[in-house]
Image 1: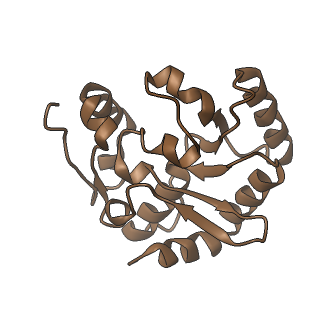
Image 2: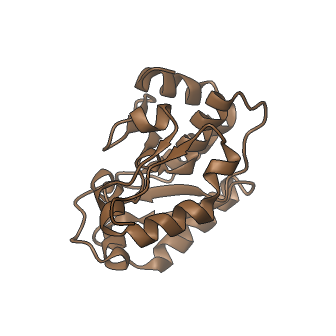
Length: 187
C-alpha cells in the first residue's frame, strides 16, 4: 500500500464495507463520513496479512448538522441504521456538537472536527459520494496509517493524558504488533 488510491481500492474490494458505506449514504445526512477504526482497521489488517477482519467495537458514522445538535437525533439515526444493518455496531455522532464535549472551539465541518481527534491514523474517513465515487478524507494525510504509526495530533499533544489513556486502552499495539506508538512530548 502506497497511497490514497490503494486505500480506496482496498475498501472498494470489501463487499461488507461497501454495504456499510451505501447504508450510511442512504441515511441522507449532511457531510457524512465513516471514520476512525472503520478505515484504520481495514488497512492495518491488510498490512499485517490477517485473513479475518479484526472485530470492530463500533462503526463511527460522522455527520455535521449545526441546526440539530441533540443526542435524540443521533439515537434515532442509529436506530434506522440498525434496522437496515443490525449486525453493524453503529455509533452516530453529529460533529457539530462534539466540540462541546471536547472543550474545543466550534468545528466548521466533519473534516475539521477530525483534526481534533487524538491520533493521526484514526483521522481518516471514507464515504460514497452521491455519484457513487468512493472518497477518502484524511486531514493529517495517510502516511502514519500506511506506516502503522500512532502519532498524536496537535490535540493529542495538548491532551497528552487522554492520548496515553486511549492508546493504552485500545490495545492497538497488541492487536497489530507491527504498529509503533509515538508518545506526546509532555506525556
